[in-house]
Image (cartoon, rainbow, N blue to C red; front, side, top):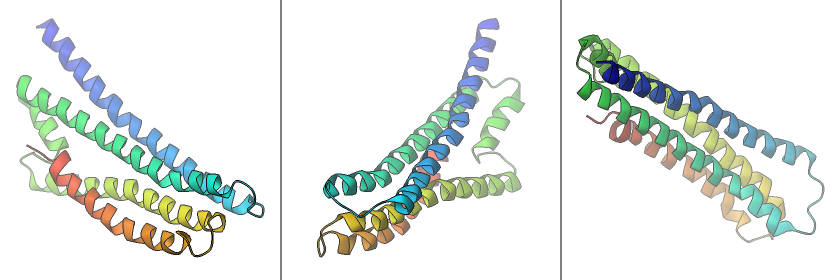
Length: 180
């Protein structure tokens, strides 16, 4: 049927569009990282609006985290589209098999292993820049905070955040992306 074929093509295009947004999000994160580095290299002596500068610097890890959530949203949406295709377009069977394989649900054990490796790499390259941004932001904000205040715990907090965030990212592989 032409209508079903058009729906299938539209769903595949939408799923592809979500996957294409991922590099743009990574570019935004690396731009933030560059901004931190440029700021740290070119900053003058802290003066005047110290709390505003510190707040701006410390907002960067939060923005990076929100971008990571957006990446997760893209992955979930692509997953939902592909599962819809599996359920509603059984013919030809190769389409459903490819959609299952793409999400690590196929029948070939080697494919499933490679999909898991791909997913771990995806989480690592998403989480690592956010952790780097958190640590560098903590370091860059320290000169703008009063001595003995939050500055003392800032770096330790950023470092402790990273393994927790990595664990959450790895858990998301199984619970969000590879759901059946």
